[in-house]
Image (cartoon, rainbow, N blue to C red; front, side, top):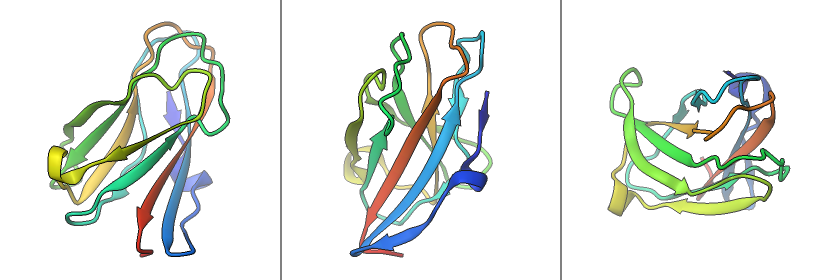
Length: 131
């Protein structure tokens, strides 16, 4: 039930797009929810989420939620099931701030439906316009 955002993240400006990446490890022998480390939001800007970049077979449904925070301490669900299921495929979804709200801080949350075996799931966040 760990997340290694600070260890495995890279922040780069690729052709005008700012990319952040994190590998999240789902706890072995548990169906516990796992949250990423926080990443800075941008006022009034959408962002894209690439989920399960390695197309890891999780053998269970695993929705991806977006958590938002105004103070970086208390987080609430900003968008439930942005990606309905990240199991066994790479998916992309857009977080629409005009529909879901804009926060200065966000986290990714994975909520597996069944017991995990310590699988790693790579997540990528993409912001337009660089940083």
